[in-house]
Image (cartoon, rainbow, N blue to C red; front, side, top):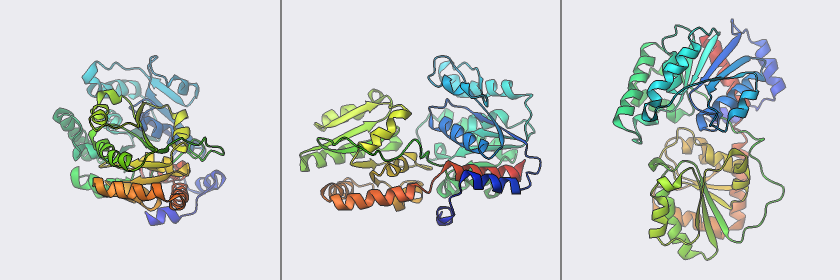
Length: 386
C-alpha cells in the first residue's frame, strides 16, 4: 500500500508513452461486461475504468444493462458503450441476468474479456476465452446481508471460477486476504488494483455557503453493514452537548430501514434523511459539510471517505475491513464504541484549527487515488492474461 501511494502519479501523456513502449503481446481490444447500471457503484467502476483505459489508446467496449425506465440511458450516446436487454422477474433477477449476458456475447471476440462482479463473470466463465473478473471483495461470504440461497449461489459461482482458473481483481490488500481466507481463492489468481477517485467530479468549491449549524454528513448505503445506528446513537449525545449541530444522511430509500424510526425514538431534532442524491449533487453535499463520519463495519475499499477528503472535508472513520488501509492515514479513526466516536467528534467540533489540519491531510492523501493509475495497473494485468 505504501509503495502504491508514493509512486509517481503519471500524466495521461506519460501513461500513453509507457503503454506504447510495452509489447502488447496481441492485446488489441478489450470487452468489458457490467451487470449493473452505471449509477451504481459497480457500474460507475466500469465507466471510469473503461474511460481511462481508452485514454491509453486501448480499444475498449463496455456492455451494460439497458432499460428505458433507467436514468442512465445517456451513457449509450458513447459509441463504445453497448446495451443488452434483460428481464428481472423480481427475485429471480440475479439468476436470470447471466443468461441474458451470455446470449448477447456468445459469439463476441476480443483479446480479453473483463467482467465486473460475479454475475457477469458467471455468464462468461465457460467461454474458453481470456477472462478476468473484478470481484471488488468477497464480503458476501463473511458479512451476512442476503439470504442463504443467494449466498449459496455466490459460493457456487466462485467455485466455478476457481475450477476454471479465472483470475480476479480485488480493490485492497484486505479484500485479497479475505478472498484467500473465505473463498479459498488461489493466491496467485488474486490481484489488487486500487480504485480511483474522479477529481473532476469531486473537488473543493471556491465559495461555500456558511451553514447555520455545524454540519455532520454521512453518505452511502443504509444496510446493516453500514452501521448507521451507531452514528445516530452517538449523535444523540453530540446533540445534547452542542447546541447548533445537524446531521445529514444521504442514502437511498431510508423509509425502508429502521433508521428514521430510531431517530424519532432517540428524540433527535436535527437529523435529515436526504434520500438518494444523484452524482452531480454529491460534490456540493460533501463541500457543505464541516465533518464527515463513516461508521461502516466493513468495506472492501470505501469510496465515500475518500470522496469527502478530496473536497477538503475532515473525515472521522471506523476501521473495518479495508477502511484503515485505504483511508486511515487521511482521516481520524474511531473504535466501534459510541463513547469513542462522541469524544473524537467533539474534539473535531471544538477545535477549528485541528479540523482544518485534518481536512488538509485528507485531501493530500485522497489525491493519490486516480483512475489513471487504476487503468495502468489493470492494463498490465491484461498483458499477463491475454
